Image 1 (cartoon, rainbow, N blue to C red):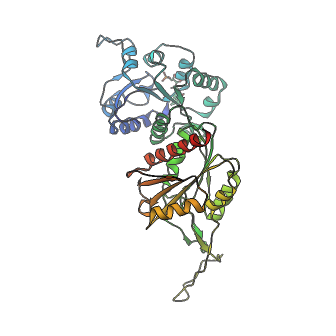
Image 2 (cartoon, rainbow, N blue to C red; image 1 turned 180 degrees about the vertical axis):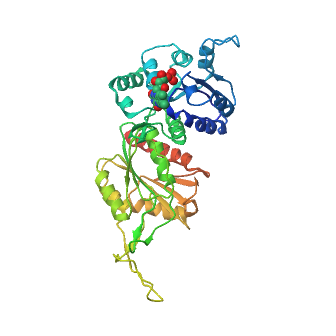
Length: 402
Ligand SMILES: Cc1cc2nc3c(=O)[nH]c(=O)nc-3n(C[C@H](O)[C@H](O)[C@H](O)COP(=O)(O)O)c2cc1C
């Protein structure tokens, strides 16, 4: 969604300003044209030279510059397809919310068409963020225009060393948020509660050994981000994933280790959900006996007896009331045949079929099966696959409500 876009970026005087260099560099890789306005105080944190070099364009700082004939705040606002202000200080938020136009960034903001999207990412110390005037200003901005979006800050260790809310989300998650937001215009999943499982489960044999698989969690996490970008309330139930994958901060994540814990978490959240997406690679079998002590290498052979785990998707299919259920099938052979059978057996509304070759990769190639239709999609990044899946869910919602 961001490819080839003309993006105006506002950088203000916050400690997280350095992260914007990475954001700009990622946007340049997507062939975006970037123009940047820096406040005078932003220049205390990062240099104009660095921003100019990375953005491959002139950086604007002075409201009354006389080096060309254009009126910069009007020309920049007209030029851009969308605007991102990150990090947004408490100060600039106050100015935006109250119509103050005393520098180039705040004046350009007021000149920016209300029909174009603006993303504002507040970042500051948690005491500042929780200050009631700052809260009020943020609320005022949210209500001012449906095209204005606030990217909420993350919780974590802040620059001052304290723990709290106020961190600027990582650049890749800002981009994923904006990309999904632009794709799913007008938050079509607003008000929907979605439970998603992702990643592998680990079935422990003894305290240090387990049965698992190569699932990276990337597909489930991307679906969670896409659903959140489309406005849903998302609960992500995740097995242990080896790489940390950035998540939009409105998503509630529940960490689990084995299939029994995953089942418990699903049971606790299924009843209140509208949609259940089973993307996790849950072990079908687990060791019948768990050894509390590490197994010793005493014999040449070791017999391990396995027993079936609870089939979580099947349980959801049996217990469904209002829920739309989306299953996944990963197969080495007879993909479509097996997927069709699984969809029927597990009472799914949609089934996403993919080859086991896609497990652990950053791309996926899927078939979307519904009761009377099969759609094939070409191989694409898991973030794009997530959009296809969410679009199929939206279609199902429409079908059921009309
Ligand atoms: C070291 C340091 C770090 C700061 N970090 C932040 C910050 O993260 N967020 C914020 O809202 N203000 C922060 N401030 C305060 C702003 O720089 C100050 O309010 C300034 O007037 C903002 O100007 P601007 O909004 O025009 O860029 C910081 C100040 C200092 C000295």
